[in-house]
Image (cartoon, rainbow, N blue to C red; front, side, top):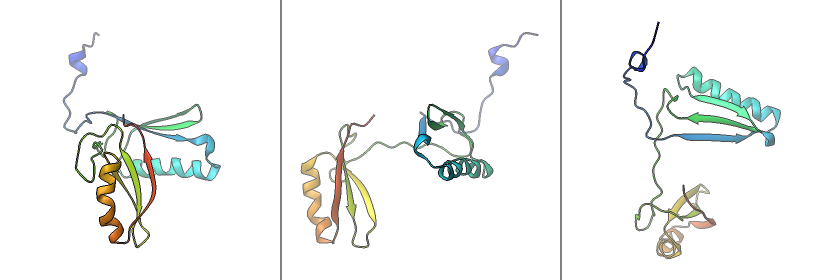
Length: 138
């Protein structure tokens, strides 16, 4: 019996992602206890109806959040400058602020000048900069 592609193609009601993501964990650095927690986390997600492909190899554990993902959706949003809302950011500054209540928040800025325009308002409210990182986005 011959099966055609049309015979195998079924429309789906579920929302498929417009892209995909991979969560990759370096298991070579994990203790046995932490590794068990990682597998338990995936099991808990499966128990509540969230499923995705996964695999282990080369010292890594990967969760493939692609077409195989069911029970959840992927929403990827571009980084936006918190000061001028410029979009997209190719080389954002990631600024880690600490609030007066000691909570830590990470905000993105276009460049040093946008950060310097935002800084007085935060510092007046008792916030302080912990670290600043920069890097190229995808």
